[in-house]
Length: 71
Image (tube, rainbow, N blue to C red; front, side):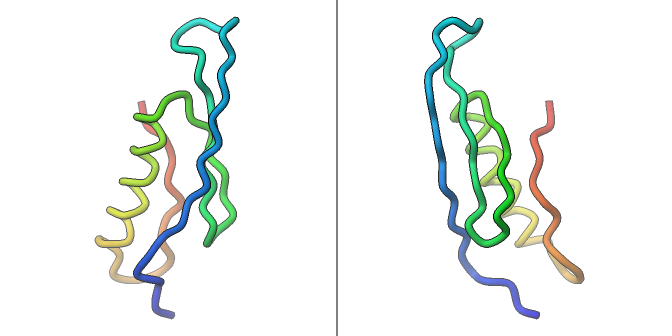
């Protein structure tokens, strides 16, 4: 089956000032798959999006692997 040539994401961000670090947390949800990944910065959110795009471009057979954060 052909994969779509686009991806849609819903990004939710909220601030938790009592926590260490920058206090921002969030989730990024893939509209196509429904998967939700927790993020702790915009950098993490952009990394998830980049991994999804990269996986789609590199895909030759099978399904697109779900993106995940790597340290």
